[in-house]
Length: 87
Image 1 (cartoon, rainbow, N blue to C red):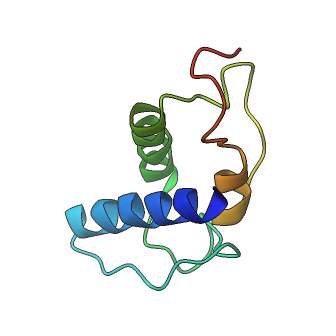
Image 2 (image 1 turned 120 degrees about the horizontal axis):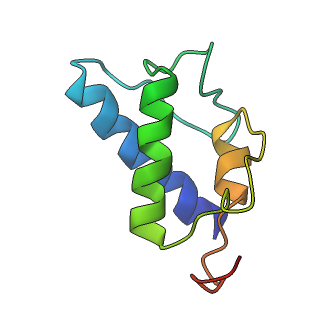
């Protein structure tokens, strides 16, 4: 499950980076979103969260923001077997 989410997150990060004319470095579970090697800013991160919601049908932040700093932490927030309407 998490591997699938890691791949989806990496795919979307690559698209965001390409749209900015940047090259995405290798992405793994310990890759930090902000202040690390990724060529993204907070607006790009917000865009990523919207795209993940559209692609998975899930919004793990529906009840409020959950702190995360790495790709692995974000991937763990999504459960592919979770009902899409769960609050």
